[in-house]
Length: 271
View 1: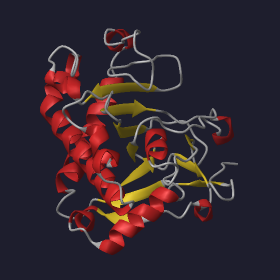
View 2: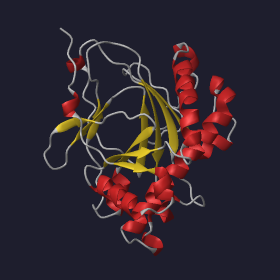
View 3: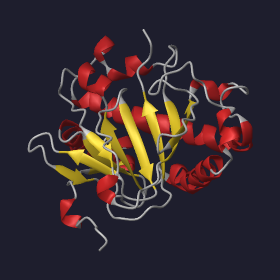
């Protein structure tokens, strides 16, 4: 008998409108702060004017992701960079681990050699635009969090993400298929390095550990929204006032099939 997860196991997450954040709506900024404090995950509603381009590009980015990973292994292996560890990777293909990822560094999008190798070069304009929009979105969140926390001067969070200093922020394309039995999916429990993570998925895939109860729940996929979580650097920069939450990729029902994700990692500048 097939197993599925009941919607009652969803973790309640706050939803914040990007348009209202840009308008400096006080209630929306407080919602953002509370979501970043506990559990450290929240949704950003992109259904307004400010999120129109991201929403329009997302379907194409998913298709680029699928087409890239559908290539023969040999073609993808040509782009593997073994000298860079996962988590700091700019371009990566890792075979034989049950999933495949390829990361495009925001800074490297200016490089014809590293940013978009192979068939990705055909979609460089799309990927560059989507990456830039993700970066702007992430900085909007950081700016509002910093302001509401009363951080100023060198302590303001934007100073750690200046374009005058190098950083590893980047867009990651991900293929992470499900398995026949959901209870056999490998444990991927972790926290994220970096500042903030933006995540889109073709289906529900993220579980969150409640920092108060220790119980696990699902992050509901919401159309026109992006799932965002606080990462380790942001927790450290804010002295623990914001929470980098334990989470994992899992699957909500039995059955093996393809599944794709697109994520953007905002990372602080190297100092």
